[in-house]
Amino acid sequence: MAATRAAEPQPAFPAADAAAELHPGVDKGVKVDPISADVATSLEIKERMEAAERERAERKKKDAMQTLKKTIIVSGIIAALAGAAFAVAKKMKEKQ
Figure 1 (tube, one colour):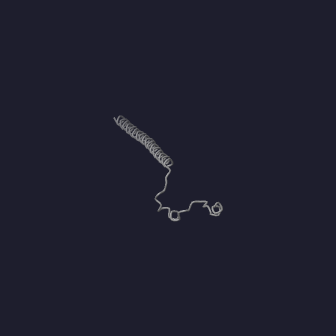
Figure 2 (cartoon, rainbow, N blue to C red):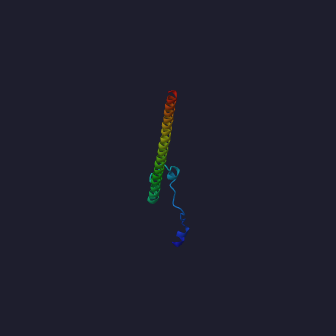
Figure 3 (tube, helix red, strand yellow):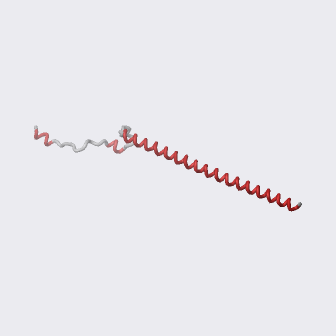
C-alpha cells in the first residue's frame, strides 16, 4: 500500500475558485482584519480632527486680521475727519 500512496499526486496548492477570482465584486465574504480596520479608522478620525483644528486656527487668524484691518480703516477715517474739522475751523478763524 505504501507504493500506491507514493504514486498519488499530492496537490501543492489548494484549488482556486475561478468565479471568485474572475468576479471579485460578487464575493461578499471578504475577510477584514479587525485590527487593521481599527487602525485605519482611528487614523481617518485623527486626520479629520487635525484638519478641523487647522481650519479653526486659520479662521481665527483671518478674523483677527479682518478686525485689525477694520480698526485701522476706521481710525484713518476718524483722523481724516478730525483733520478736516480743524482745517475748516482754522479757515473760519482766518475769515473773521
